[in-house]
Image 1 (cartoon, rainbow, N blue to C red):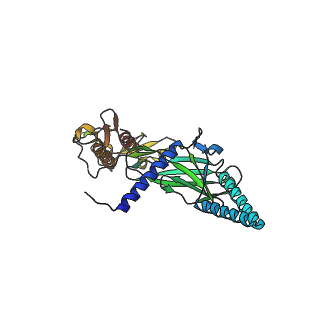
Image 2 (image 1 turned 45 degrees about the vertical axis):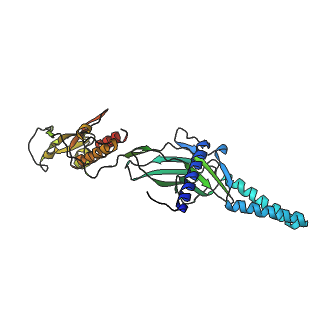
Image 3 (image 1 turned 30 degrees about the vertical axis):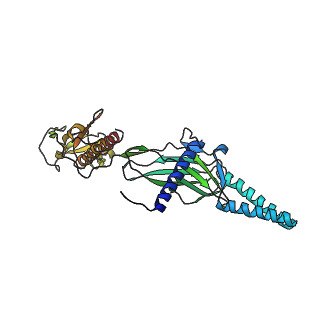
Length: 331
């Protein structure tokens, strides 16, 4: 049994309590809905505002100044106190106004494997013809640097989030906040997003060999027994064919998409089968299948995928690879 210092236990407990409170509050908070184009506009009822530490300190100082001025009947002290209070109120209004009617749109990046960072792109736009300063977008523990928007300006930024499990992930707890102009108040809002990123299973370091023996499938010209460097003839383009074998001269002559065939096009067909793997847990099997898909693609094989409740017909190429990986991700 490991022993942890009392300070470490207290810090962990405080972080856990803080995270629980934040999740509870985030669940109750009103969020800016997205429209049909996936854009969320921050409205009046979606903005929250509280004083910062500096704002609380200023409030205490102003209260002491008010009590002292009243006690000594100092009119200049009262004038200065009310002037500073007016400045704080105006600053609070501008902090709230800095978020009003902002437009936020999010888009997911390319698929990744579990354990890699998923990238989300955020576009923040201003269409009210007023500059916006000190804007920060937070997603969980990730945050952008403070940014400034000019009149009718926009900024595009990217945030990378760590992934652990396979599936489709969304940026949770997206928050836009500002402390503009004096840092006395912090205003924030929770815009909704439709952005998603597909996370493939983590590929295993090694996988069993393809247990089913490959079968040779003759190509359109017949099994000529030629090497990969021997030209056989042209054929029409099929989805998944490598762009390297396109006949660009034929395309320039307006003959359409034509692929050059070589003797090596006699690809062996194999099946990547769930039932032919050792009886392991689900995630381990998916990791092995993921590695087999990557290996088959690298070797240029024509392969299919068989799972307990679904299957993917035999194919080859990058499009077919991502199709198989997507099926494994959603298994």
